[in-house]
Length: 412
Image (cartoon, rainbow, N blue to C red; front, side, top):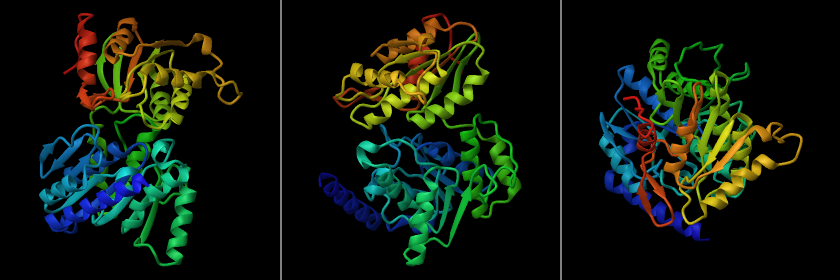
């Protein structure tokens, strides 16, 4: 009931924002990107291809906004800004293309009400935000709202959400209750409308997950009429956004910063980097407090599949105990069943260091030649929440300080 009241408030703001700024999205070609993982990279990739192909493009994502060539900070822990701020950004874009990263919360809370989406993209729907949506099915329903509002819907056919999405669209189409004139699928298999065989391309990004992100961007740009050669050129020159598989130190050992904070994101990044590591994988992470706690043991289990050393620490614990959160993460490593049992658990070293700065310093201090230290969950974010509001935090400064303590220097 409380959330419904809040949603009415957000809807009111959405209506007022559109009226105040004159429904600015109607003057633009708007591409919305949603999904559990890959939103920011896909949003940035679409923006990059449009920009490098000479189009007038703007972007709003969790790492910031680029409106008319000017960069803006969207604020602490923000992906989709408030309705009022969002409409103001859209008004400043004025014309051309706008790529908007869109969360399930923003969709459910009507923060994107009134925006005319030409294309809606769904990257995937994995385990996340069940504290808010309660069930996976309701989570899918929230994400699907973007697709229903869009003229063209682009979806990942390989994702487990696809059967639910496809079934929903079939029902809506039969009742003529949907705006879409076209539904485009992408994936690795032959049954997708777009796959690497049908559209060969090259990218400098690592991991299969970035192949999916690239396919989503390709599908969007082709739907917009961007020439294939311009798309391939943009894909090849693209560099991931800040804090996405970003190597910040690489000499005797390597330090990488990534935003992964879901079980699926852990699986994707860890499985991608593990084969290239000559030494040990040292993984520093935590889990957000007062958020979906059911994912914590799964994160522990996934990390322990690949990491040799796990350092559990703070990651916006809010009013929850960091020790409690760490214990819940660790419990996933102990699940005694044949499918998830960690056979080499005795070889995994687990450390619990609540202070994130100290945890990073410890991880870097114990790193040996050939090791890779991976810190996940904070990356580009500029604050930490310990239950008394936001306080400044900078993952890069934390790594820099840890390296400096050893007489080393982070790369420029």
